Image 1 (cartoon, rainbow, N blue to C red):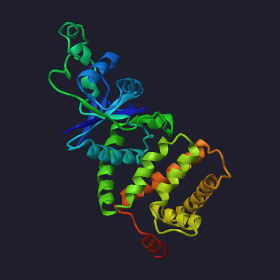
Image 2 (tube, helix red, strand yellow):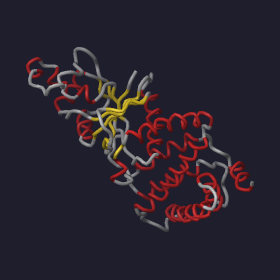
Image 3 (cartoon, rainbow, N blue to C red):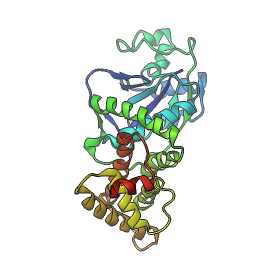
Image 4 (cartoon, rainbow, N blue to C red):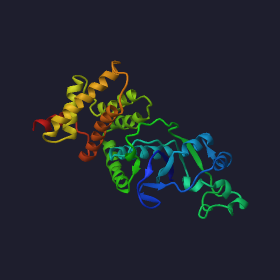
Length: 302
């Protein structure tokens, strides 16, 4: 079974209507979806959220992700979340997915007119093909009913074909690492949640909770040991010293926020913490594993 997720804020940076990279398909949005279409879904289909909220969220939707071949919506969400972390690690800005449906937005847009023989004749060419209420039933579930999201920058909102294909491959490898290392579930969930927190300071703390979950046995000398392990995990050669210093500086900001001595976090400070987390996600992909603290120390001393 296929499930569809509207992607808020992102814009297509590729040619053609869609990119097929199983088990995912990234598609442009073709049509506007009228309130009458959504009202038809509410009265004749299975919506587990108000159709008015769908209308509001779709105003920020330019693309849709299809997750193919899943038994339940929960399985589809798990696959989506692994892919979105891979997209973030490939440089795509954080984004939101407000709900999931069993049919594409390009199928259910126009359903109100399509259900009527009189109105069907007046539809735009091509729009008359799609979901009809007497032929199939759409079901929709709420997922992230919010507009709160920390965006990296405007350029990172464009999703190119290369970035998408790269991210699908990265997601597959990260999924395998996740199966072998269950503790990474906490890393992925914190990574996904962090950008959705409206307060940048709290979001930064969530970013660092994801970073710290990479090293669950580190419970003393946190700043020094995290900086040491992250420099070894993410850099090579002489670059490790600069990276070590960067992490120490970024962690100092995190500590000030956590202890209440810093009330406001700048966008640049948040992005610095986010970059360290993304570097670490990319290191997991590159290494095809999460090395332990002992393994990283052995690398450093060898």
